[in-house]
Image 1: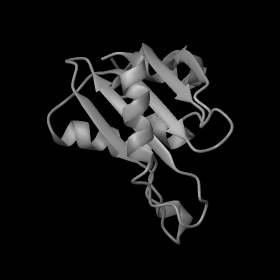
Image 2: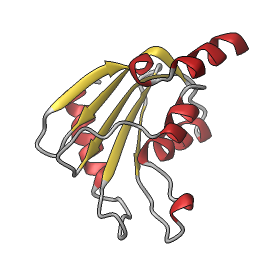
Image 3: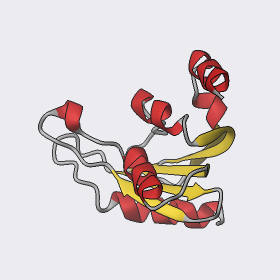
Image 4: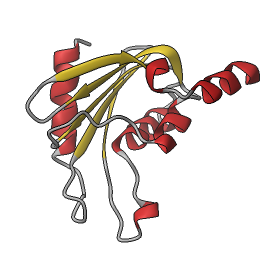
Length: 133
């Protein structure tokens, strides 16, 4: 799927965000290696440690439907800055996403920043992932 369409779908997913505490709405469009697209939005909880990010929602939906490899992740937020995956999302995505997979960050004004997953993945985590294969 084209990045423009994925960004549009991530923005739509963010509209379903449940974020009464931070007011930060995040949407994710996750494209699998087979071309399927799964959407997720952040879901906050009064106990912040129980909040789940849009990226993990989209990934868990994909995995629960039988998808495995992740080709691309597009993350949109209503902030004025690029919002990369948190450490927990990086850890979870590292089991499903090739380090050369694309991550596209989209700000609320539409500006975009594309990078490979390995650009975000800490070196030690990448080395551990390769070691476990």
